[in-house]
Length: 310
Image 1 (cartoon, rainbow, N blue to C red):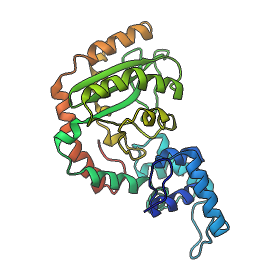
Image 2 (image 1 turned 135 degrees about the horizontal axis):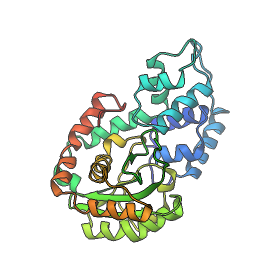
Image 3 (image 1 turned 90 degrees about the horizontal axis):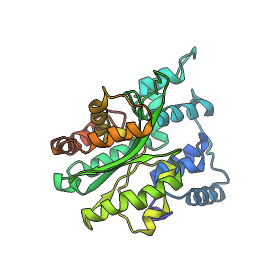
Image 4 (image 1 turned 30 degrees about the vertical axis):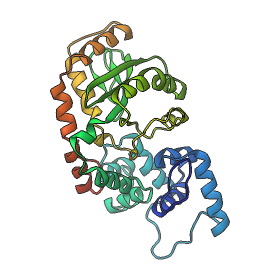
């Protein structure tokens, strides 16, 4: 059993991945978000590791590495920036101008060393046989941007600004009971704004769902809020870089289709359009999304943790 940091048990694989991630230049805040622990917990673990081994850098033997630390950081950064990229796509983007790029297998090994793919597979296997009743208890959440001129501007795609730009950012949630709140985000989505959303939007809806309900959020550092712990909220463990496992991504696409031909003069008008269409999304759409969860899990397992079509 791993040592507990911030109510989280770190396995031996987690510990090895943290050491490798630190060697590859990941910040302690990034590692904390990836492994669902506190920054202080990461720091304490690395200090203990250094005291035991004399260094967090182990001596390597065998063939020399074909990537240096800068390459490894760029591989991880590219994957974090766009979690939907496959290993071949990451290789092309990072090593576009390299005369001797590493193999796709090397890129996969660097991602696996950071613990990203293994955690996705582990999560998928743990939830593969969940029933629809199990999925109904989850309150899925996310935030997204919508351009004022009706174009979808999801955070996991490269942004395209046309017609002069302008966007409206929203936070939304849904469950097996149907659509939950849709909230307009004014300004930058930082930890203070997120705490306000949790207090005034998420928590009332989650409590109305019943005691067995569970809140899902991604591993963005601002989401590792102590607020949910202080309110005794059941939070779903979530693997980093997994938009393909979150059905709300497809709900955003449905919302965009409904608003595709609607232009807005400003963010107030755009949010009014989004809210109106959000409230009209039928329950059949929610049913389809939740019924897809077993297939999503299986797809991640089949892809060995790498990005899937979902």
